Length: 343
Image (cartoon, rainbow, N blue to C red; front, side):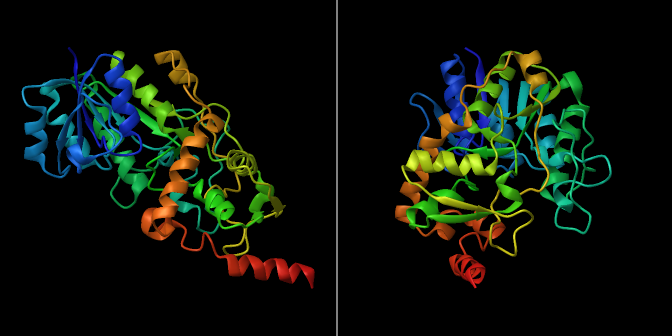
């Protein structure tokens, strides 16, 4: 039986990835910081606890060898070298990167969005041969670019499929953008404001679709870079309407022509220019077909978010989201904005 090691198996992508590989006949060792305590992993899968930064422990985990390593928590050139140093014991790898490595060709990307004249103007859609940011360790994006470069440089010595997802969605997310709508609905907020006329598009990636790409890449090893996104990306207005449908509520949305004034109208999807990725290469090279659409995946996400919010304050439940968007639910500012419009 083919042996696969999945690093980061307890996370948002890890659970469906382990399930997809196990169903495809792989003997899977699911590795995470929680080890066997992780919920949601399929039965019959071996679980191991691992500190990703421990080189010796990782080498011991690989042991005499495995056919596949799926790495979902690699963020730097150092993490890439952990794998390439074990290349003689690993048949192939699938490593998750990010669309934020893309540069628009003028030095602008995700890291420059908040700077004057720093808004990237990507082609629509973005193909995998688009320029990327310089590799380094300064930011998440540059670290991922360094990771990619190190892995692809070794070529056939360790055939690696690099996947670039967009806005990842599904249960167990540390940054669930859908919370923007779910919490408002639960709080009885029936009016909301969206910048850029609600037309912002940031290509989503269902964890289950990424898992399908991992399954396909595992069966066809090679050195390649592929976008890892859903079919037609919805606008932020369409996402809000879809959440309302799942939750059975009616809301009224006020659309702003331009950017949000401070926190009012700024959602986790509020980009002025679209970020849309081309999926032709994955279809051509792997025969990829998405297993779920954004609306199909939403009920499970909404149910999970609703449960989490019943257990914890949103800042405690999702500290990564709270750090990125500390004013996401500034209802007082929204009410003041509506009041000012009436005067």
